[in-house]
Image: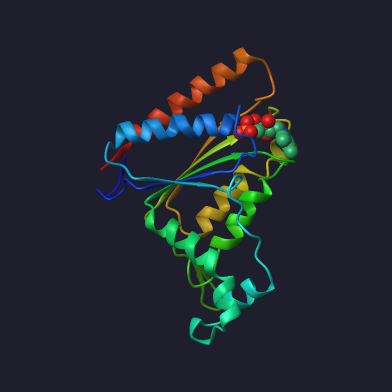
Length: 216
Ligand SMILES: Cc1cc2nc3c(=O)[nH]c(=O)nc-3n(C[C@H](O)[C@H](O)[C@H](O)COP(=O)(O)O)c2cc1C
């Protein structure tokens, strides 16, 4: 049983499939969102679609600004950090994070990586004291829906070694301080409709079970 404070209603949802119609990760994200609203009727849900509204890649001046103390920022650095500031504030304001993500070429879409590169920032979402790193996003849970065209990505499966989505996102969010990262793996989306329907039903049950365990 997980206990969250009453403020734990604010969910930030990040969608990253380049597909709008027929996207399995988005469909299951909608399912999760409905369950979240049922569980927390007063929930605030913030949406960010990194496929439809492109996050800029970090550039030379973004990195210079990230590693320069704020009081020494010049105008160029300040401007280059606006998107990072906005995305980090949005993430910090949320109590929980939902990411919906397709596997592209065994990894995450570049649109989601661009978001990650903007929010993974020293002094803001993680710290380093010269010897140790610490995550600064404490007291938050993350839920990740992953859609894979093929099957066999779970531990022991034929493609397990090629899963650079689930282990990466789990590690990254843990590094940033998330208390818990829960994944829903929607495998073999390129197969027959009956198999897909069965997989979606199983994931819907997993989602309900996950949220059943969250108490305010
Ligand atoms: C550009 C691209 C690359 C893909 N690469 C992989 C892959 O490496 N492994 C895999 O199992 N499926 C791969 N797929 C299939 C997608 O993971 C699958 O269609 C998934 O359902 C996409 O998510 P969506 O339904 O939310 O759009 C790829 C699809 C696209 C469009």
